[in-house]
Length: 84
Image (cartoon, rainbow, N blue to C red):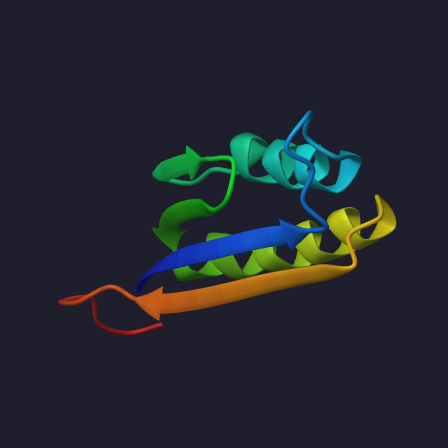
């Protein structure tokens, strides 16, 4: 199964990326995912279910440790993908 993860970390800072956003970016860029799109207001990654779930765990831990006060996640199973 393949998953798409969309996430944001808060609080926002329009002047420069806060430490929690940098930590989250480092997690997804270093992960063995098929697609990574990092933007100023939202981020999207795609990959095998096991990899995406592992990224969620690491992302939550590191972003919270770096000062995130809120992390919003949405995970979708991609159409046409079967099994876990």
